Length: 232
Image (cartoon, rainbow, N blue to C red; front, side, top):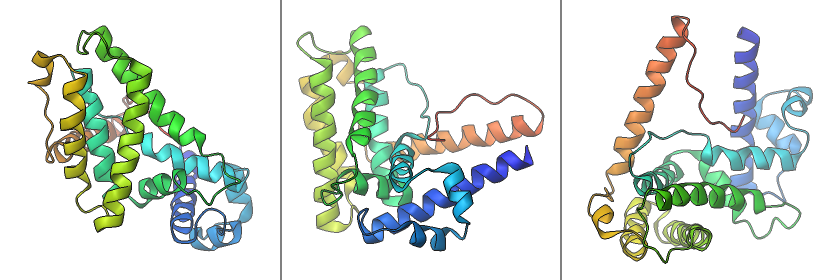
């Protein structure tokens, strides 16, 4: 168990170092040597976890989704929560910030950036599909087209926020995006019950942290923790 925990910590250290270097230098200019220096690990340790610079980038991409949010009775509420929480994490977590930067780095010609967009798209398709099955969507809504539009809208909104004010107003911009977006897809009775507010992200993240605390207690007592999605 101790060896496994060390491996998890080492992998995380490498990802955080790679994210910082990618964020500062861009994917193309970043080197494995710079990442090793930043992480303070050996080349063998890095290549044990990641076979190449591109695999490191994919690991950084996956950090966007390496969090399990509380389930909601409304799948559209889950969709909102995922967008608001991602906006909050973009402001506060360098790994998440670097992952979005990599996905939108048009100078990284040798990097396949489609996995990042595919992860966003697949997550939105799943939630919108569940919402449609529960009768939360208007009859005309095409799940795949709507998921793609949402990915593009969020990407543009966060980029504008970054350029205008280093994402300081990102949660508010995402709220405005949902306020314009949801009335065109949601059944009115469902729409009226949705919590679309800047404060929502903080409340959801607080629930995630409480759940993590209970999980750690359970592990210390020998309980088996609930499975959490991860980029590991």
